[in-house]
Image (cartoon, rainbow, N blue to C red; front, side, top):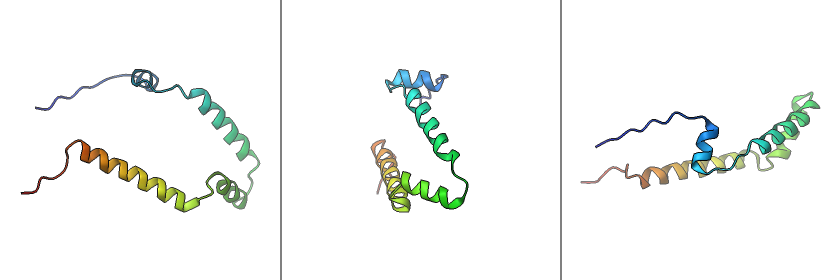
Length: 87
């Protein structure tokens, strides 16, 4: 048996229903600071230097984050019983 439930709500309503915190103020501060930081960038070299300050691990950090997400997705898929059954 398969049951589908469709819920029509805004992201704010979904976060409140799931008990997640309201991060709108933190996001506004982050966007404001990011905008201020990018106002002085006039060349690609400055942008590269700024991005290295934000992500000091660079490409390695991005790959590590990707591996964490892929591992979580694989775990979630296995936890829901979507594995192939061997005969």
